[in-house]
Length: 326
Image (tube, rainbow, N blue to C red; front, side, top):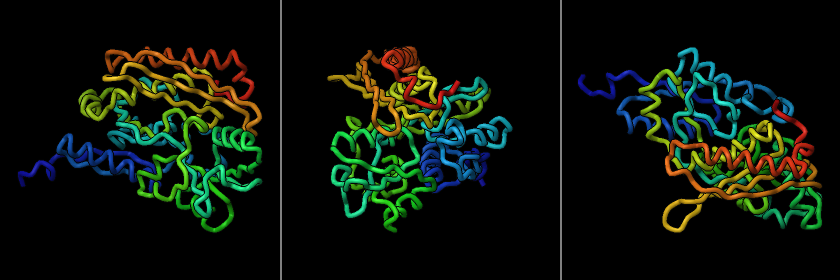
């Protein structure tokens, strides 16, 4: 047969086994097939974060969904991998390339509550499911500002499991990433999309990371065509803030960089927050910098993140985080 799609060697894409991971990896696989004309096969890999039943804050969070995929890359068992960017440790291994960060999905958090309620409509003492210290800190602070109290209940499990806690009446609401709900076609179940003015997302939330061996220059160059420079600049600033705070991805740190400009994108507005999980104390600051002229220049967003982190540390952020990733 002369059909190149049947004779070309398939590219092996490593992915976690969850429905969400398979959905987002499937979207990347489609893009790579269209880009290269080569078949792409999904290789399912189980990570420590998938098998552990401990809460993410207890097992550290940093890298627990990533290490097995990276090991498979280095062993040559897969050609490239797709991660949720917020799961990636901020330090990039020299032998692996972050080849592409595609256009970001909605970075906000989403509330799914009983009876179609918004957060402000939840009753005093409402039980809200989330395993994220970042969400706990900001949700508790929000409830305090409304003159009421919520109980944040640590939960694990896939999206079905988490939404099921509300459907069964075990919880009044759960908070999930809007991007994940969108990617599996369930965003319509959200009763409220939480404004970043009230709840900042995790650094890199809503973005995907496509990683491959740095030595495979041809594949790095091919995958780079899926990169979105604006998204890369934004998440670089957010992750630089996280790294400068020396905080792991299970620390109560939120960050979001917005791109702005009249005709062309010229500015990067970065907001960050650190807080105690009971919401009693938040350090929330912002800064603005210029977007680099070259998409390959990450020094500007990196510096923006470091500068904002320094301001937050000067305001006492270090004492609020608990876990430090040293």
